[in-house]
Image 1 (cartoon, helix red, strand yellow):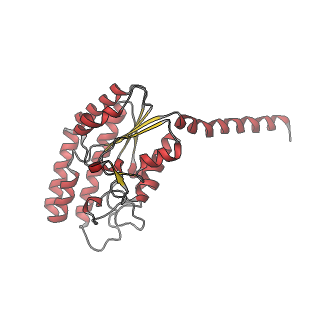
Image 2 (cartoon, one colour):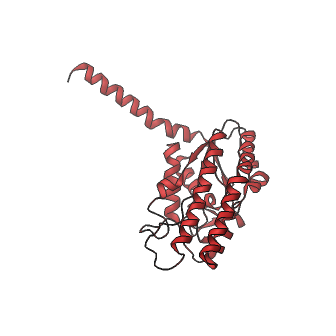
Image 3 (cartoon, helix red, strand yellow):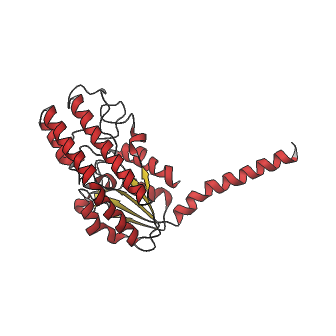
Amino acid sequence: MKRPFRSLLCLGATVLGLTVLSAPAYAAGANYVSLGDSYSAGVGTGGPYSGGNCSRSSTAYPQLWANSHSPASFGFAACSGARTGDVLSGQVGSLQSNTTLVTISIGGNDAGFTDVITTCTLNDDTTCVNRVNTAKAFVNNELPAKLDSVYAAIKQHSPSARVIVLGYPRFYQVPGSCIVGLSNTKRTAINSGADALATVTSARARSAGFTFVDIRTIWSGHEICSGSVWLNSLTWPVGESYHPNRDGQAKGYLVALNGVTG
């Protein structure tokens, strides 16, 4: 083997080694806090849950990330049912000046996530589409300012933190393999609501200098009515419905988060 080639290989191995080591080194020193709603709390996984009504799951992506990366500290503040106002009043207090990593999913409850699903389940196509359009108008016109307030508060409490904003998946594969349940018209309308949320949230996150993770990408092929579902449909207990199951947390959210943290 010629010496220049050997030198290049050694250099390449050194660079690769530095690349591999950099992510664990960052993670090991991270002071990590998880904020947000039920998608970050882990509702839908079947538990076990902690935190009372917040329903924080041991199989939610924030806990799984902490388990695998061993950060210096981990605060699990995400709470089922949280809206932007709840993050401001009850969750940002978990942040410290030395917090170095923050994850958050928020905005779905502000937009009326539960009412949209209920309306579309119990009513005809037109009523469903109209309710989704009302939600989308809220997302486009009112949610941006609410997100800006949350992001500003995070910056204020933890100015040196890396903040990663995770979005929501599309709910349905259309037409998909479901024989019963909501019509394709309803499924398409609900998906358009998820798209509106992603568009607005990504824009506000990037404006704040945060990293946005578009969950729709990794979730493609795993929606309700697909062959490998990561999201519960209507189920029991009802509160588990339309939330990521354990695969959705581990193979969807966690993998997507690892993609930007290492």
